[in-house]
Length: 451
Image 1 (cartoon, one colour):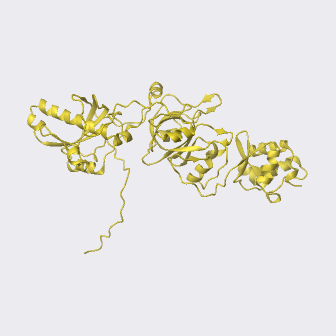
Image 2 (cartoon, one colour):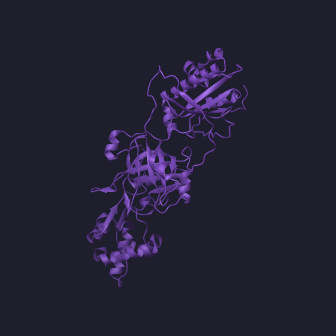
Image 3 (cartoon, rainbow, N blue to C red):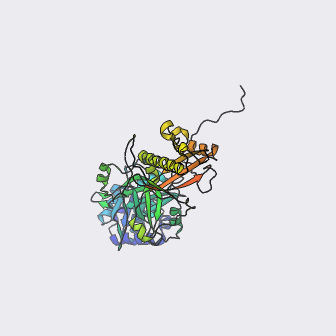
């Protein structure tokens, strides 16, 4: 007998039931088939190796003749697929997982198989099942994650609360069964985006009439916060740290509607700048070492504040406004201390000499000794990261006795904000963690040679 004699849908269902009962490895070993690469029977959301199912089903329909072994018939579009589809089953066709992977490019579309082939081509891929074929989050190496997000999806009676704001803040939730003490959830909360990557692939529909919708790669993510009260699922907010917002044509193509951006009070102005006088800077204590405790549900839902650190580094106007505010504050401090002579000598070094000086403002203590002030400004909280160059760190070491870091936060260019001061070398300050984000590499010199 041959494959063409397989005419019973019930026999196919019996084979699928056995497959599900004993598992893929045992099923394939029992009937002598290799893992499928291209053709899978899809039944109730799960995928099954089509050729093995057809061979086993033949045995269920004809128990006296037994199952067909792999050498007795060929798999493919015109044989197994055609036979199973004639019995009312859907057979999914995917390209071989052994193909050369596509390169990863921002805002390009990818199938799950293509994403698998980029990050874990050495592992198995089964359409509609398993880690890469079905899971919403995949940790393919320690600390390296891929997020598959379908905006607006539902699972039973549960609707997922997920979306992206114009600031690039992604609201995302874990699997419904995960709690705050789940090991994977804890790894996500403690994730360091400077050393490991979480990559976002997003779509707005599961499928269209043409088949499953591809995912669009929107870039890497950095942890912002999580909801400290709700669990099963756990709710997160992430910051997209690639180019954002995406071009309008990309958003329109994938049908992504962005939420409202966080209002910004930064003045988008070019030099020369005329800033209002009498801005108020309120001195506060430096923040203590922080833990990622998350936010209460009411605050989590009400605030989708972006990661200001990257925006700050690109906002020259904000940085300039902060430097001017510090200059005004220094002049006022010296005048209140009856040192008008010193107040007249406060200099805006960053404007006069450029960024290479290693600090921004030259000022004085009341006894006349010089102090060197580096100004870092953010609209975010006191805990917001900031970028500092190797040159600036080195300057703080060489002039540790006179060096001051003024960290302006919750800052508004029109009215002012708060600030704290760090004295001395930034490299030896235990309350600041310097994270290397880039290295310059060169061929090592041979010091054994004498000239």
